[in-house]
Image 1: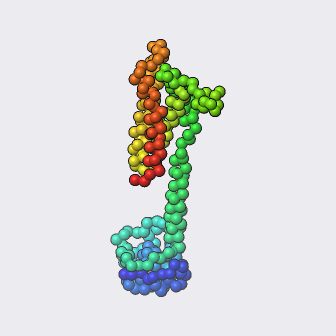
Image 2 (image 1 turned 180 degrees about the horizontal axis):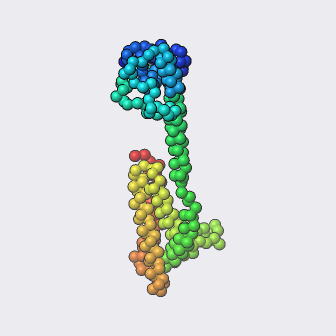
Image 3 (image 1 turned 90 degrees about the vertical axis):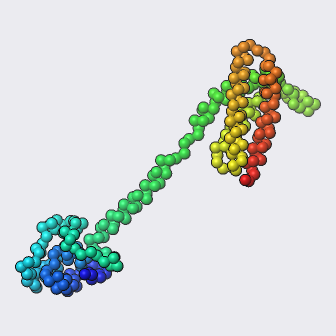
Length: 267
């Protein structure tokens, strides 16, 4: 049996009574309150009014079911209907009907959806970026130790005070040993940044990865060599240490130029 199609606006009880009588004629008895709610798509108050109108005009047979279902005594409009076996399946092509009882449910679903979507920005706020300033605090003692180690090793391998502008500025002098910490450690930090940034071509990222690891290893070996020589009271480093240290500025220049070229290239 197909229920009458109703509009989205609530209909008065007077307009629904004829449909209720047709339903009673089809069933051969006065329908129950739940059946009226199901077939006519109305709430509990209207179902009671329709049922009262039917009982006033019709005399129910002896076998008719009770006009008031004991399970329906609660005024809750969302209460479960009577036994499912008593209700025919609803046709799939039945148009959606908005009744006065379904409106609160629709509003509740809308509120739940809104609350769920608004929870996304809260999760995004919890995943804020970590601050970077502690790195500066960590780098200060490392800078002092690395700088003094490289300058000391440079003094043991022949680096020292030079006059880079003879005949132009004779009084200007600089200790060439500072080129070691500036070159090696600065390149290592830059290559590490390029490697981990993920915003460069693959060739540049691979080159930055291995050159950063090599630069950090060379820096560690340089610190170890200086402290071992200093602890042994050596005033001049062995030739092979001097050779390796003397090649560092040239190696840093080559790796820096190659990395800059690869960063600007395209795979």
